[in-house]
Length: 123
Picture 1: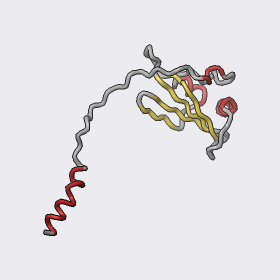
Picture 2: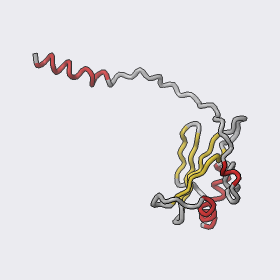
Picture 3: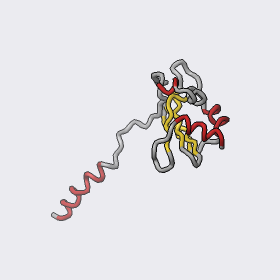
């Protein structure tokens, strides 16, 4: 009786080990990204719309480079701030470009985007 109970109790655990997921990896199509209001901010034009190579020439090597299809996030940091640049492929194809940025201090507090871009350029 106890043996039957233990067997029945273990069935959900064993069932959880079975995978029915499709393991095929498919490339995500380009994402249509609406123009960001950041494109019109004076001082951010040196970042918005740029490629990963252009950002590397501007700020140096990224501290983080995270690919999460279809996006890519490059993170640049200095003692003054942290900048996360989000790059997406254009609809018409081609190299990923910056469509959005976030900036913050290392403690998580907000920091002005233009000030952060300028601080990262100075280093």
